[in-house]
Structure formats: structure tokens, C-alpha cells
Amino acid sequence: MAFNVAFLSSLLILSVVFSPGNALSLNYYDKTCPTAESIVTNTVKTATSRDITVPAALLRMHFHDCFIRGCDGSILLNSKGNNKAEKDAPPNGSLHAFFVIDSAKKQIESVCPGVVSCADILAFAARDAVVLSGGPTWDVPKGRKDGRTSRASETTSLPAPTFNISQLQQNFRQRGLSMDDLAALLGAHTLGFAHCSSFESRIYPQNSDPTLNPTFANRLRSLCPVNHKAKNLGSTNDPSPTTFDNTYYRLLLQQKSLFHSDQALLTNPKTKGLVYKFASSHKAFTEAFVHSIIKLSSITGGQEVRKDCRVVN
Image 1 (spheres, rainbow, N blue to C red):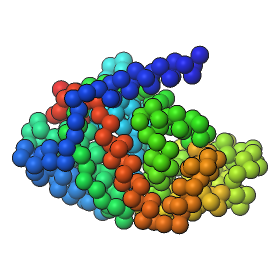
Image 2 (tube, one colour):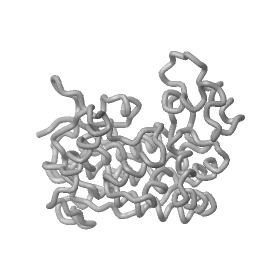
Image 3 (cartoon, rainbow, N blue to C red):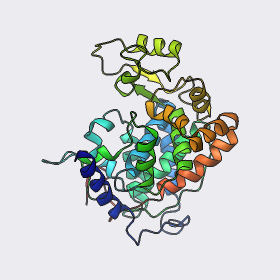
């Protein structure tokens, strides 16, 4: 029964996401706010120069935004009254760098008031995060609107680190994303840090996951001792957590991935072939990633342009 409720909830969300009238364009702000993207880029650069973890945070924030109600900036809204917002749900507890979006929005509002959505600012910031990490660039389609709804309960629709390949496929398909998109977008795990709670089920009890390299599993157990109470323990996603590269895929083939959902890519012939392809060609990975993130970030569903990214108008 729980599965059916979650599935119906996803369908309800998608009915909002794929509503008509949300067409995006590359030149949307050319006349109304031509400096918007450069303002965001400079803001992300400044924040990254002070905190190297900012790019990974912004990219993850964009992903989590787009998977709930589309890319509508709902991840940015604060909880209010009895409503607990997405950002305060357990899957988003470690998200940070919201101040980057706030800063960019304030600057843009001073030159183009009421024109540029918070959802677009977040999409620009995610692109800049990848570029500043040594990854590819792309033209971001523009014209998203900001949503007026943000519910913590809907974060159950996010893909979980414990998902198998069937669950991943269904989760991505519900958002119009293919197996190719799945394999490419999980490559975003080349950036950032993961808390112990997201992969402890693979390392305890010992030898519980035969797909995990034993030496690597021992290292993870040393980083995440049993019954630890520290909230910030964990591991970087790969040895180069601030560089956007294809190391993630090479580690998959060495059975050194953190999440069960990562290793699941090797359990399907289609995605397994793509893992081998991306592991051997950085160019193939970045080209596929750009195609897929544009597709993901073009899922829309908002209704307004917020004046403040944390509250509805």
C-alpha cells in the first residue's frame, strides 16, 4: 500500500511538472536582464574561492529541486507555520550554500527587479558549479517560474542511495528521463561528500555486500565506526571530490562506489555498457552529462517570479 501511495504522489507531482505553458528559451533574458548569468557566475566564483565545497552543494541542490515538482526553486523555500519545507526533510539535511542563491538574487533584483526566477538562478549556479570544478559548460535554457509549494513529505520521491536498478529506472522514467540519462547524471557523484548514514548498510554487518571491494569496505568502516554518534562522519565521493571528472565510473568498475544505487548501474546491460564507456572516455561522459542535465533542468512547473527565494510572493 505504501508503494502505491508514493507512486500516486509522484504522478500528482508530475501532473504539475509537465503542465503546458512553461516553454524555455536560450535568449529569455537577453532584453529584460542581460547581466543575470554573469552576476550568478561571479557570485558562485566568489563563494567557491572561500569554500571549495560550494560547487558540489549547488549541483546537488539543483538535482534535488528538479526531482520534486520540477525545477521550480521549491528546494529554496523556508518552512512556515505547520508546513515543513523540502530543505528541512532528512534527504536534504546536509544541503548548504543557500546563501549563494540569496546573494545572486539580491544583486539581480537590484538591476532587474521581478524578472529572473530563483529556479533559473539555481540552474545557472549548477552549471557554473560544474565549470568551476573543471567540467563542461552549456547554455542553460531559461524562463523557469518559481513554485509556491514546498513539502518535506514529497522528498520521498527523491532517488535513494539504497535503490536497485529497477527502482532507479522507474524513478527517472517518471520524470521523462531514460537509462542513458540515469547513467550520465549519477556521474554528478564525482563531486562532494557522503555521510555514513547513506552507505552504512553496505558495510555493516561485515561482508554483507559482496559487490563492495573488501579493502575499500574496511576503509569505510574505519571512517564510520559502528554505533558512532557524530553527524558529520563520512567519505568523499571519490579521491578528487572537487574535480568534475570520470573517476566515479572507474571506481565503479573497481567495486569502490559508496552507494548501492551507484553499484546498481552494473546490474543492467545498458547502464553497465555506459559505465565502461564513460570510464574510458572523459569526453563521452561530459557530452552525455550535458545532454542529460539540460533535459533534467528543463522540467518545469512553477507559477511566479519570487522576490525572495526563501518565501512566496
